Image 1 (cartoon, rainbow, N blue to C red):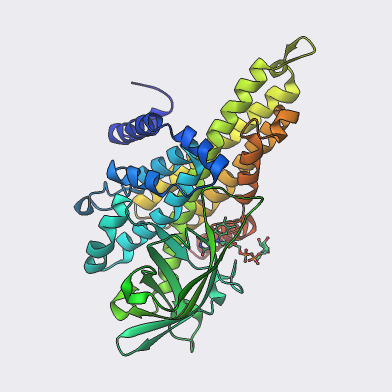
Image 2 (image 1 turned 90 degrees about the vertical axis):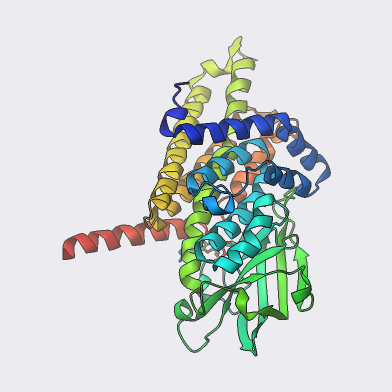
Length: 396
Ligand SMILES: Cc1cc2nc3c(=O)[nH]c(=O)nc-3n(C[C@H](O)[C@H](O)[C@H](O)COP(=O)(O)OP(=O)(O)OC[C@H]3O[C@@H](n4cnc5c(N)ncnc54)[C@H](O)[C@@H]3O)c2cc1C
């Protein structure tokens, strides 16, 4: 079928999206989302079903049951964001974990960790942020010291999505304190629940974010001399910064895709509501104060979506996409914020009540500007890359 949405994608990509949408509809993912808002539970078993049905980890190489392209992962992030926000958040950091192990892990690590992550039986988390290292990720203090064949990890990580629930954590720590952290940090695969490391790991707390963030966890973790086998280092000693920058480009692209998805049903709500609601004897959609808001929302969101897919194609093509992934995250979070903000306004008093999901979307959209690097940091990266490119041109 020829339609505008499908024409940017291959037949196989469209088939993947169609099958996924069909599955999410059959499972009534919107109803699950509603139940989570009402009862605040972590939808682990629903996440597992996605794995059982074979939808998780399409980015993995064919050898590990994947399709070998990030663009499928972006489709998955977008559709999950649209169908069930808490499920999309579980997915978000799990996907960064398997994508990073697939790109930087040894064959043994891939064989050991990827199947359970792909099945959804294991959930992943990324642990970079610390009490004193937020935007300035190079200031991390967590130390990993090699004693015998074992790394002893000591430090704290905060704001970790899936942190207290994760089976597999990717943890960044300093392995050579004598040099610049860019050259002295490493990444580790840590199994907090497995026998190898039962001691020395503690969940200090799960934060309550922005008046509640049902169905998700965001944790403060303590590593108090936690022992991790030497072979769990990812991609080699002191290679952590390189892996982090690569991981962050993927993270920002998938995160942006999730936000584009989250905004989609909110926009639809605004359109439908404005067509039905009558004031002054006519549908409010006939007032330009309303309909021009819709025009701006659609335009921004569509631009963000195109940017996200363009970035995924660049990464699949083997290009560096630090600038484009920052632009994707910036555009998507600001588009989502505009969509949610305008939807609350279009719904009037009802937009502020929990009769409609607009107020919840507004909170989610506000929250979205901080994770995966704040929007100020996204602007910093974009301008830095632009000036670097210009300098490069002038030196040619
Ligand atoms: C919901 C949520 C989920 C998260 N999930 C994870 C996760 O899974 N794993 C993980 O490791 N981390 C995670 N984080 C942490 C997140 O990456 C950090 O919160 C973020 O990078 C900002 O760090 P900070 O909160 O310490 O703020 P700070 O870095 O202290 O920044 C404070 C303010 O200063 C601004 N600022 C800082 N530096 C500059 C600059 N150079 N120029 C201009 N402005 C600047 C910031 O933009 C911000 O407005 C999550 C955070 C949230 C809220």
